[in-house]
Length: 378
Image 1 (tube, rainbow, N blue to C red):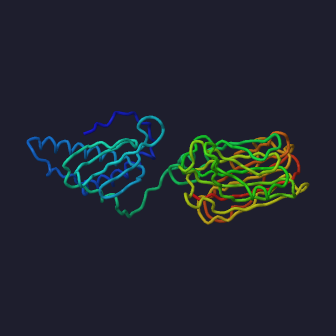
Image 2 (cartoon, rainbow, N blue to C red):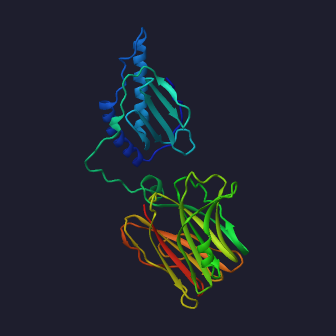
Image 3 (cartoon, one colour):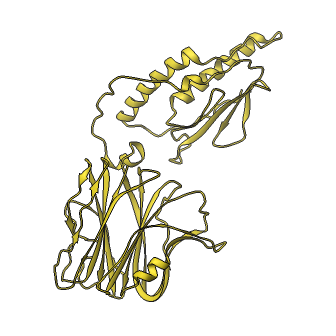
């Protein structure tokens, strides 16, 4: 039997402990009635010792399963799951148990490592208890820190952004991935460009470019439009995947000499298949207003995140890092660096499905603008 190493665990909140205790109780009941590791196949003079070893393995397995946060494999003979951080790196650990009916061995692996044999001559084993039904009323949860929602309760959560600028005319730019980006994250990219390069963006656009192979993977376009031939905006999304290597870098390509300010926003807790629930675009001509409108969208899901983006001709008319958008959380408000074009973004949570309403960016003076509103589904 393999002895589990002693590790120090980070503290949990009262809410996490309450949920864990509730789930653990249900799990233990299921295990007590359905988990079977037969000791009848153990033969020889040391059978009692082997039965004792089997009992200890079962106790260790119970302890691991009580802490499971998610499962990646669930069959009658094998199970793989995640447990909270055990080595202090702030990442969940992976554990797997597998029974081979041919060799009659029970194996264990930790952190994706090589499987180790825990028991031999195991004549019966069954994980069917993992598929169980439950009916009843869940207790109400107390208020939680909203910063925890994205990864723990499936609510869309903004995690950060990265940006890039072209102070001189250029035909493309590379943008670093936002810090902490992991597989499965939703990335939304926006680019504000001087002049009318709408057709160039439509023909080229946003790519995940692998610098080691030269291969590029296209992003999904949400909006590409221009306001009065003076300012262009492009907005795209992609869900990160293991298909993108460490050498992959996002590239915005428009194949025309002009200035640009671009940024990439990172989200978690989104719908993993159809994250963009709704979108809308609105343009405002020069000399119309100091407060260009970000249009309304109608969401079809509760708990959507409403993301508002804007592109503005020139940069003399903005307050850096202050997009306006009353009641929203600011993401960015900045320029390409030489005064030709600028862009901004902010977001707000919408608890119930329906009309998001409009909002407004704040400028110091009137200028050509184009705005986009996106609803991200949880």
